[in-house]
Each structure stands twice: as C-alpha cells, then as structure tokens.
Image (cartoon, rainbow, N blue to C red):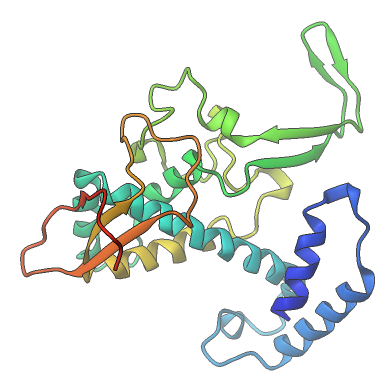
Length: 255
C-alpha cells in the first residue's frame, strides 16, 4: 500500500501537468479498504470509533503524507533546540510535567515549520474576483502561494531567527500569513494530530538524552533560508543525573 501511495504522490507532485492514474488509485483504495476492515491492534486507525462519520478512507492518505513531513520537522526542531540552550532547557523541563500536552515543544516544532515549511508552495484557484490596487484578478485564476515569502517577511523582527513565543493556541496565525498547514477549507486534516505526535517524539528523546548538533553549523541570529534534513547530524548521549545544555560542535564526525 505504501508503494502504491508513493507512486500516486510522485505523480500528484506534477499537479495539473499530469493526469490521475485511476487504475493505481483504485488499487490503493482497495488495499486501504482491506486495512481499515482489519487494522493492526494499537494502530491509530484501531483507536478511532467504529462507524464514524470522519471519512477515514480520505483522511489516511493525508495522514501518511503529513507524517513524512513530521519526520523532517522533528529533525529540524532538534537541530534548532541543540543550538538554543535556553529553549532546549525549557523543553527538557516540560518533559517533567505530568500533563500529556507539550505546548512549548509544539511551538518549537511550529517554528521549524515557519522557518523551513515542508510544503513551501500551495496551489489555489480563486472562487471570486479579487481587487488588487487598480487591477482585478478574475475568479478561476490559479494562484501560487509561496509560504517562505510570508513566513520570513523582512518586516517581522524575528523573520530569520527562532521565536517560539509567537505561537499561541491557533495553528496558522493567519493574521500574519503563516500557513505551515495551509488554511481554510483545504487545511491539512493532520494540522493538530501531527504537531502533537511529533512533540511527543521530541519529548521522548529529550527525556533520555543530551543533544549535540554536529552539522551543519547554524547562526542563530540569521538562520539559513533552507535546511536539508539529510544534512543534519546530531549526537544523542545519555544524560547524567543533572541535565546539561547542548552545544554545537562543528567538525566532529557523527555517531
């Protein structure tokens, strides 16, 4: 099923330039239907109410896509925490809280998504005419929304640095144009699920280990416009009784 979905998603990346492979789509839907009837014990699907009205068949593909992005965001969040000792210490303190929610760690994850959105380009079609200055953009026009343009607006004091405090109870902060999960009717169905689970994963690591960023070297006051998660090298070491702050260590080989 994963292979079939990967093939479909690769084709979908071409957007309107490639037609839908309907034969492969039917195969995926059949495989998914079989899995939904007999889910693995303890899996996310098995925990959902039977006979729910949530259209699970449509949501699962979104979840699987979102968890790919979640893995990328987790690596980048760990890299950010490793070179921000005060934020790292706060996230470690949060691990000790018996409450399940991890609001600060979640904010750090959302900052990683603001700085390096895993979906940098969003495609939309106007449903009504839009006035822009003395021009009118007609209904039906295709629009490209380039998220990094808004996420790193030079007018923002924190445009190129990490600032978890900007994230409140809302996911997208639409007033300033942050759209890490898109927005509106087409918002990612996993916009709450993924940050929660990714935060738990980060907390699980922080509860056991110190983090050292081996590469790349990051300048915290002017974070780069791109950060390949394939290039990130982290060292996790068992934490002594008293937690120490992380540090960046350029030039050492990863373990």
